Image 1: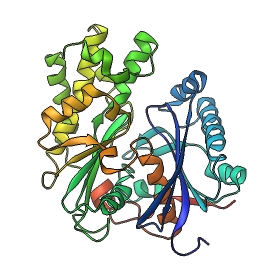
Image 2: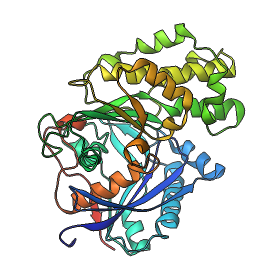
Image 3: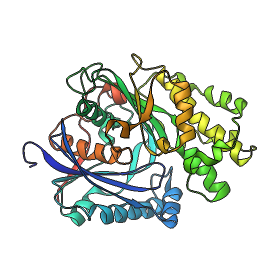
Length: 363
């Protein structure tokens, strides 16, 4: 049993950008954030990244087994460097996500991690939500609610995560609990860094458009941008979620553009998707706090500031760690699962009722 009150929980996240594993420790009772602990990052090697890319979109087969081994080894390596955790939250690596089809699939066995680390591990966070009619994503909103309370926010605000896929959480901190009606609205806005990363990887052998240097030299192809915004996804009411490669045709839209113009256009598409997403918020947020790798792209941030009608800044402006927010989220969610508290609700994933997802594997 997890001891009562605050505990030190360790969370890990390996996102759709396939760059590596973030790990972070927090102190929480599953409701209130009491403190932040050490963090670590373990990048994937080019070879590991290639193994993971080969498994994307697959549910079974040798590629999936190879990816699981990579994911487990990398997590054991980075998580094994922490001491004092009562519990680990392990997200795994999403290979396929079809909430209205085959379900959701994250590579990595939490039971294997529990055996290796000697600490209870909560994992498979998304499947229960999907079984009960939810999208299975995004799952960080319950942690965003706790962050808004920790900040002392008094008015609605939004957290925007720009990873491989973009997702937005609108938070009303005037509510008492994250599962209360009207406390949260969350959904995937559209593609963010994944198409841009894939483009520069394929054309230039780079991991990303660092500092937006390539996009800054280019011009946005307005025709391609308009075609992108015609996608019916943007008018669908949230909650809603996307697979990493749901907008794979984006790269085709910029296929005949030069490198700089293609990068500028893909960056503009990510920002425009957020702008369209903001139309779904119950009321305009007082501010937008950006997390994930996209906040380190000055061109992306400039485009967001130009298109959104409120202040936009990195989460560091509120005293939070934008590199580790999702890893911290799964530490927080692990404690909630261990204590039977909900981790998603109708406003975040469209699930029929608030549900506590996740499997607990003991050491």
